[in-house]
Image (cartoon, rainbow, N blue to C red):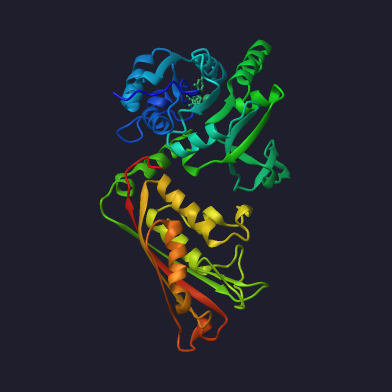
Length: 398
Ligand code: CTP
Ligand code: MG
């Protein structure tokens, strides 16, 4: 048996809600996504993260069922886990979890069981970012256009660039969180999440990037989404999947060309929201398409201003991360560029080296002209096509 040192971090998994909006005939944590329940999935993510005390807060009467799920997910870390009984609000359930912390714990993460597919990397990232004074939440940019409404009327527009959608786990220094909880319970105030309660006690909260996979299962549509993500055809097939991506950019703008992850001094640049690197963009679409994870616009488009001007390595590293989180490994990528400029062959090996290193898989790049036909032939821009293969690396990777 492996001896695990006593951890300094605890994760409270709140699973005591009734799941009224899901209306699946059982408390939400015990509803099956595939052969495994919501609770089992979230605990598998929790136990794949760095070792921590794990406290599962269960609905009254379902403590035994929660214990069974905990044991199944914990494996040899079973001694790190225990089940406590929840309360009638989320805040009371968290308080019940706090009461079960070991003495050595100095960092507490509070996690919704309903975020069943949260990647372990998100749990580790939150834990690593907590300081003795500052709480941390994962958050995603808001993509929808938001309106303030009242009695059927739109009364105001809301600037979404000032907003972020909060996820869990939310991490805090233990002493400050316990004091903030005591104050909230004494004052009889219910907060919507732990960060709001912590901030109301006068403390700072910072955010790190969340993950689309950490979405909360609230409605039947969310449960469908989770089922789709875990469908055997997507995540556990031995058959490689292929994807195709194309990108076209016109020459234009100031500065040097960026193409295939390289800067090309003296060559005319390509125009675009980022650096216009059509080779990188075609590769991103081919990889996302192969894994069934949407497309470049969804993950890197204008709703994500942080990618404006970004170079290939940023896009490709994030794409690799998205695939890993979804349980895929990259097989290979083959790219072809059509255009007159730049002359690619002198730097082919260099470009392939850069692209292969960031993706952790072989990337080959070929280039051709089009016999002066079409826009590439007229020298107006370039066109790139990429084909990628991915294979399943098993569920809950990443
Ligand atoms: N939760 C809890 N104790 C409560 C209420 C909620 O532990 N008294 C937990 C839920 O189990 C869930 C998380 O808090 O993991 C987020 O809550 P929510 O998504 O609202 O879940 P439910 O309250 O179960 O759902 P609903 O509001 O639709 O009834
Ligand atoms: Mg609720």
